[in-house]
Length: 211
Length: 278
Image 1: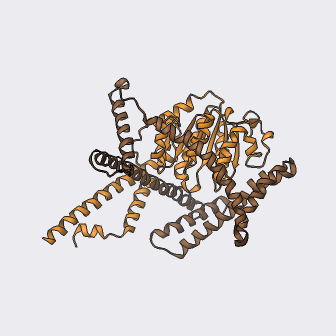
Image 2: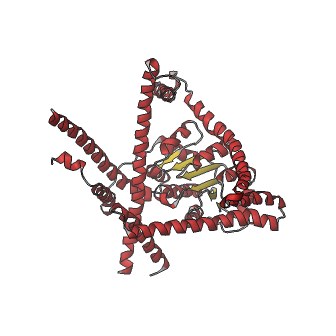
Image 3: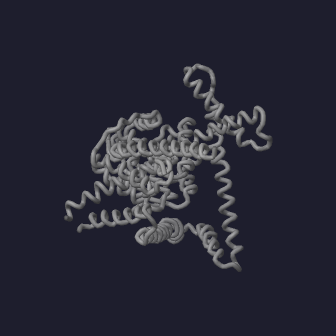
């Protein structure tokens, strides 16, 4: 059996072992699950060690003399203080740095990059310059956005015009859930197709070379 | 026990088996279902077609091996499209598990078909942790984030990377993602640096990202295997996604049938209970 063939059979074994859970929980499934968890953790640690610690900290300090990288290095090292209850407070210094920078970056990027452009794209012209269909779709978007936002407005009881608008909002939310569910089904079936594609073409296809 | 009661009590494993058979059948007996092209996929294709030949583009492998059925056909067909237009392709990944190696395997398998050479026509930057720092930092200098490529070669030794310093030198970014990293490409890279961007995403995430096409933050969108199949048809490279769509259609028909049966059973069962109570 050549290495490529061995790879195909190992993949097929783990695919079938994981699928066996659909019938019921069993030792084969547990073996596959534990091996996957262990391999992922090991691979992740190795990758981070090489791409972050070595390439972005160790090498630049030693080879390029970027001594100021010692500061983030120390901040990172302080995170390990969490393992020692007596000194765990020290890790808060690093956490404060991470929280501060992350908040600063995300506040601007989320507002500038997501909230404002998305708001802008719902402010549509309702005139019929681009045709009646475009105008109708724009109207649906405007009604959908306003009614959905009103559904999530909880400072006043949903009665009268507010209640009617909130009910319209529920319809839009339900339609959105339906679309999401439909796409989720499609996604999950796609993943199954991917495995079946492999099992039929690669694994069953390899039988002729072995038997 | 009547038919509907039996349906309500049916073991869910029968449903799994039926879906499994429905997916398997089209592989044994090939059947063709029509695939129409949606405007979002057409826009993405047109945007890539409109790029000047030999443009520098970025292809991002932000997906885990668990979603290769949906995402891999997108990256494969995008590479065919880019290489056909003589684009220089820079690949990278923000996904530690599998991202860099999938980028390596796919680019190196397709590049020879177009006589493309590593380092001159395409480069795989690999993976770096902390996508926020990575995406922001590449706006200043790609080399500051990725001093070496995925194989450990210094970027300054790669001819392509001598002309690609930061996002200003990238004409188009195609992000293929199975998670929320697409949000960060939009909010950090597109919003701050204005680089045109397209996205391929899993079906689960697709409804969310259609809004980004309307807001023109993405030039186009591939949603799940269907989006990949449409792109394969447009690029004329029918492969796994188009093949998979037959199984997809059959499985959907089965699920629709089961949903109708389930609802009918629920309503008829309720009516019988009410009649029995009277």
